[in-house]
Length: 130
Image 1 (cartoon, rainbow, N blue to C red):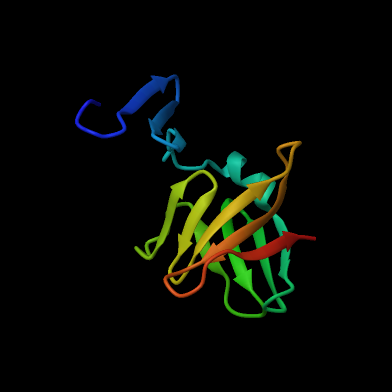
Image 2: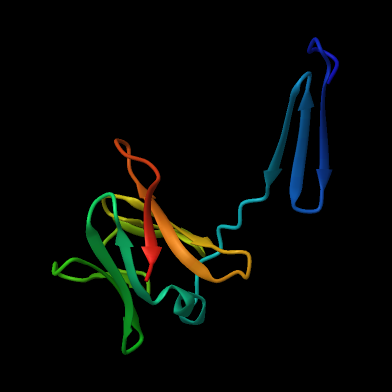
């Protein structure tokens, strides 16, 4: 892109966008907004713990529905698409649960090892799968 000094360059390859602008080099991966299936969600089942908040979250399946339960509170239906418009899967590993965004994380073997949670006030609270 010639209008910039130093010149910027953009390059698309497969599912990535590469941007070079002077000393800044960025790589962007295409966002997959496809919705999870019941089978996709199986890997998230389990209990998660945040040392920072001293709180447990549980993700589990009951019949053909998936729930998230925080401490001993009422479970939150997250699959199939609940009637509550505040619950929304933004991709196969990111879900908005009405007051916070949960982004499931994976280890080198592509196994779920926890999730990060946050909202407008707090970001990056780690919950480890136990």
